[in-house]
Image (cartoon, rainbow, N blue to C red; front, side, top):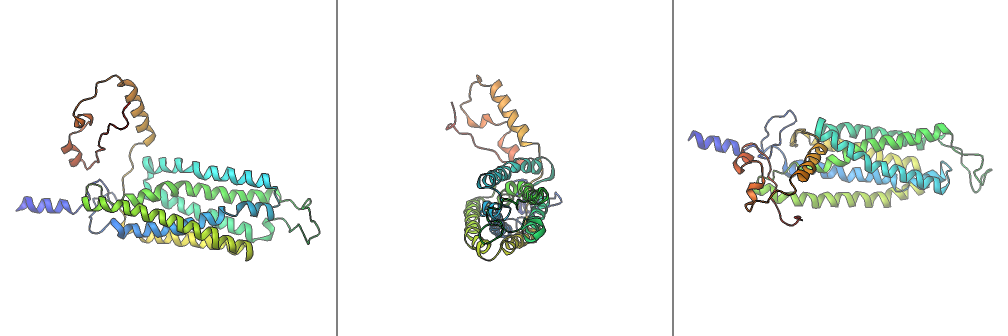
Length: 307
């Protein structure tokens, strides 16, 4: 009877090594699944609205309000966009090797909000942009009303602060959602693909709203309102994410994934002439029972990539 109770007790906890925020084993019934992923998906809707609400019309703001040339504006936006896609490499490393996904995400989200607030201030205060010029003004060519060094520095400081924030949020939010499903549980394993379906839907819905409604507001109502709305949306999205904290499952930080990949490459070079065993189970360093005992996931071998 005692053994049955022990097995039943073990079945209540996740099997994939996920824990609570304090590092303790976590109950399945009180965490993870769609109860947790609801907050993640809703966050992504508002976050994509915020990001594309800024990026979609950025060239227009640089040319019309900061009086930069089209080539210079496009180049600046391209450089900023490239940074947006490079910083996640650093954010992913910090999360996996040091702080964990949740703490890295929360810290980066605060930096993200700071960048959005600074950007909204930049487009709102007349002292942070040059006087108007162009048609129906005293300076139709904008030759004497270029943005000052300080005005440009404040604007781009805001943009790149935002880029640093997205570096920690972008690579971790989807993996936080994936962590809410125990792949060693047959029921939760089948629910995981559904999460990614809704995840992509949230991205496209938020992007659609930003590229239509927010862009229209920026062009026809004003830049202050057009930037304040995505900023408020981002604050709401982070608040929604934090509200789901009691339900989240967490993966503990481990070694740097870069180190692990380097070990794989070194091992592959050393063993490239080694004979391949006929039994796929002999390719793994642990027995199946050891994987289950240590709550580790075993990746099945495949012949499709053999060469």
